Length: 455
Image (tube, rainbow, N blue to C red; front, side):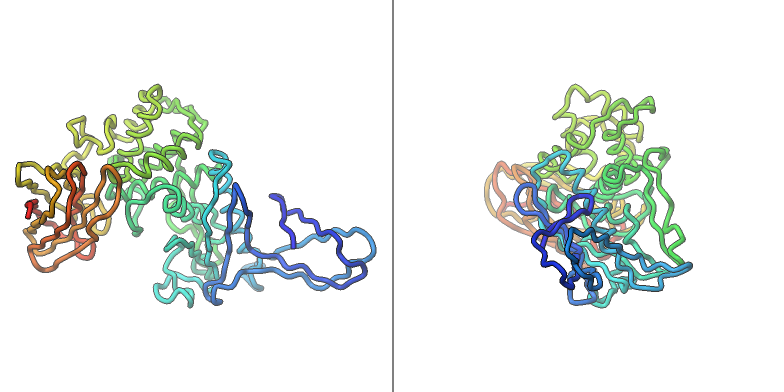
């Protein structure tokens, strides 16, 4: 047994002469120590078996021999005609590039185990993963699932798709992810957590693959474009640009990173190292939801000498200068679409209260306005009840402790069609909390009234 180098070269010592042998190659990247990794491409429709390639038998002869091994794609003139042996290794190649970007910033990185589930049966239906009904290429529960059904949607050679999903692995294992996935378009008005997560992944694709053009093939003959081809570098801000836009987020992040400074507003070329340090350091533990607000505020704090240049890039996306991790909650300048700004401060003493409205005017499920966040602090450590009333028959809430550490203290709960709900817990003095209001399952336009009462 041996490992190849980064170019696929390998060597066996002390092989018996004049002996019939074959070579078996695992679809796995593996390295112990520091740095280290274990990435396996397995068949989710084949009981999770590791994908392998075997040569036919050949004779070792009596002298040194070079054996070249070709992984066939399976493609005929117009369609796939034989098994797609090369596909798992193409997936590994893209993930290798993603890992190399991270290693360029931190050569001692140890990557947690990653299983990549790929099968020629993986399709866009939603159902049993062991049958291939995965719905879409995705990151879920620490694993990647990649589409592979011919003439429907194959993603093994769609490097941007794989790198995008690997971006969720990066956020999960090295940084912090603030939301669940959902379908959307790049110019949708999104919840700030979702806008940042998607924007980060798209920008990461361009950084890792050294190509600002994002594409995804699908359809008959794998020849159709699934969605619009996106040029991250050439994107033009419009009336959907802002702190709620995935497109704005990925343009900002890529402009901070890239070496091109031909745009008048972009004079920075930070590379990946400063971005990685923010993502894996202060952004991981920031006392707010992860968003373009928190990232830019933390980057400016780490690099005060670049603050003006950072503001120019951010302002190009119709976002006012960001001065705190909440984007304006503490009385600093608000951004555009101020009426949809998600944070609210509870006020009053000893009883604190807040009134907020959620809206579906931009759509449902992780869209802008579907959720509002009420920040509150506790004057005395004790058990408190949060009384929550909804004007329109749907109530949903969860609570996070955001300072001094970030953690969920009350899981998401919902009551529908009831108009009222109560959640309670022991809250500590000196801690800061965020109450998230909005119904995940049934978003509706409604006004919430919150009262926080010490028991």
